[in-house]
Image: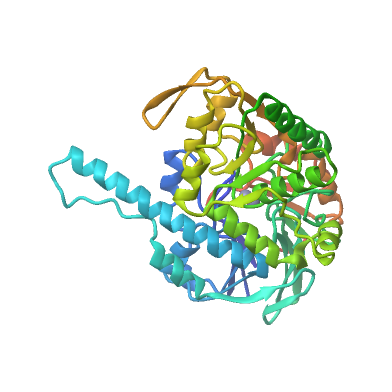
Length: 467
Ligand SMILES: [Zn+2]
Ligand SMILES: [Zn+2]
């Protein structure tokens, strides 16, 4: 029995871990590296194992940093079975196809840039994978996993998915392994959410684990509480409407958008927001994701289930408009005030939100509400950090709208929530920390006792043995 690490090691993105037991190879997640050029280049490096030898790929959830290299895995020879929850399967399809489209666009843009600069016209940048590769990989999705139901992978190997409370369909995955009379319970946390979030149930890990592989994204800090953040959201919207302006919410298509819709609906129902408020969801991907959310009530918490059973749609409010087509999106530009516009991308690095920023950022009556993580160097971060002017579509735009950052909507557990999840696992003898920056992981490691803590490096392998 061995475990080896092929992504998200001393780093947040590119999750990919391999377990081998009785000649069966099981891969947990196959995510894309995201971030600067150096990280993106990492996606073109060999996996560190032969994809053709892998028998099973288990996916914890549908975020790109966990599923974004699946088409590449299949392209390089994987012919096994992909297993995940029904909700993750649908969301992963959406995410993977969108990623392929973006890769194609990016490669074409790079090729044109190259052609302008060099004499050699034949030089072309190839996308990491294209839409056809993305469609191919969908053929390998097999059984759907149900929470807390063990699936047999091979003799002596079982996998069980447990709710991780991070995004719809997200799971921690327990492998029960038996080899030569020895047995091990190895748990992969996936990304973890926390108790009391909208729509999702609380994380529910198994209570006895020998080895845990755990995410540490926010292992060194404590988040703002959720309820004050919801109040802040309502206040900012009401203040902006009182001034006669629009509210722009740059948002991530998966989970964050649905959460915002959920709270806007609740705000209208409880009289904290105007029922006449017009809300535009201006993102084809977010609209599709919302439809997938509607279909997977089996993942809802009690409150969202109750709404649904009473014939109510948790994501619908009276003034909500979906703008799938470009023409519909452009029509929003004519609205001078009184609208909430939710558009991607969350970090404003691309997408329709940039048009809305161009139209509203200069206007002191308007507001921009940031409800998610903004990485260094992104337009979102530049605005949050107080830039007076920004460049949009080659034009300089003054920043006069009021800028709010609402911190309580994280999809990730913070340090205390990670620890309380960890304490439910019994007493793991070994703890591998992954999916975190080095300093953050170090800080989190200091909180753990009575366990051997390992922060693996890319490509490292360890025997899984009984202590
Ligand atoms: Zn995630
Ligand atoms: Zn992640």
